Amino acid sequence: MNDYIVEMKKIRKTFGEVQAVKKGEFNLKKGEIHSLIGENGAGKSTMMKMLYGMYGIDDGEIIIGGEKVENLSPKIAIEKGIGMVHQEFMLVDELTVLENVILGFEPRKGLTIDFDSARKNIQKYIDHYGMDVQLNKKINQISVGEAQRVEIIKTLTRGANIIILDEPTAVLTPQETQRLFEILQNLKNDGKSIVFISHKLNEIMQISDRISVMRQGEYMGTVNKKDTNQAELAKMMVGREVFLNIEKKQAHIGDTVLKIDNLWTSGEKEMSKIRGVSLEVKSGEIVGIAGIDGNGQSELIEAICGLRKVEKGSILLDRKNITNESVKKIRKAGLSHIPEDRNVRGLNRSMTIEENIVAAQISDAPFSNGIMLNNTKMLEYTNELIDKFDIRPRNPQTLTQGMSGGNAQKIVVAREVSIGGKVLIASQPTRGVDIGAIESIRTILMDVKEKGLGVLLVSADLEEIFSLSDRIIVMHEGEITGNLQVDEADEEKVGLLMMGGKRRKEKCHE
Image (cartoon, rainbow, N blue to C red):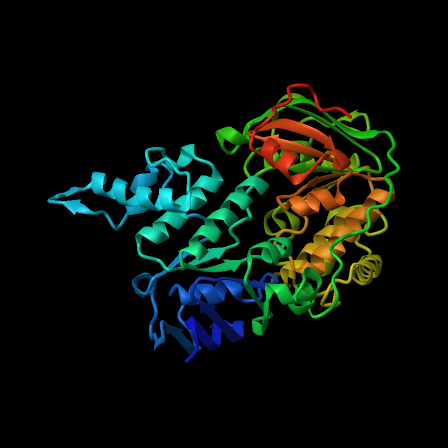
């Protein structure tokens, strides 16, 4: 008799022609935090969505509480004591915390909802686990960290003893992450079992009791935290040694190549409007922009690149005013751009590797003489970049729509860093790619800096910001709250600035 409250054996799941899980295995003990890790597309989220009943299994068996469960659905999973907190929160912005928690499970008093008893019941969980949530606030009035705690409370009020968290720290500040970890420890101490899905190995080593690894849809093994380290876990995930701590060489900083002065733009939301932002980037330096997603980073980059209208202020690229110029003119002036979503702005997925590689220079020599394309030069250039940036498959005529996220991103990176110019904007350059591609892309950014380009790096990954940047700018609600040299910055300080603390009104010039 084993002591597992969940067992998943020989799981297989296929979506069309894609085999998402080939040989899935997972088990969970009562009162433990068991992390499930792997590269993007390894099958970890798919495994847990099958446990929660969102996907049916094609083969294998799921055993909950010693009983094999057939035709598992979310309703049955909830009845079995399983709750899941998804990456995208399932909350209604215009409803209060209380209304969201009881939505679909409203206690009744006659024909009306018994809000008083619901409030008392929910408050018990808030107090017992130290959740720090205000029930009368609307969801659109609370922080991301509070919204996540609301999701956890929802699972508890539905009777969950097993809680699955899918990439729970992706949108949290360092302070909110530590707060979450305290709550998870409280839940664990109370006998709850936690499944923690993540790719952040430093957090995995902090929070886990056991760690299971998946690679390309297959179970690679389970280890106790005390018996492993980050390097060994990365090797299990990728199948080779991985070096994510890129050696940062001394920056040889030159003249200002990008200068933004008192910039104002519209925003997708009120909190993402750009309000009087001023900053500089110099040649030979990487300036990292840190902040919780949705605080104006995307709007700022769009304004620089000519994709969003500037309402007030100016943008100078190598001393030339490019404010509200066309995208083509801005690129000709010396700006390269790795966009945050490669599928929307980085690639034409219906085209080949070659067509995407030469797209930004298709009308220029040596690829064109203005009338005719030089197919030989295009092919030579594409093969050169395929080899240099290790893009796979190595066939220039491969359609990009069937390529992995990491190799698709390498096409965008290869194209943009090979154009030359003065400034490279790298927006979420390693989002949605595997550890091997992260290692490669970070090395490329360091090489670009050493060649004298100015790099403006936007990343939701604070570890990436710290490891690559020479200077860190922090944004909150469309404004700059901090401008720090990397050696004077730490996660606590940057985290406070990400939440709006110590707002600095002066222009953030170096």
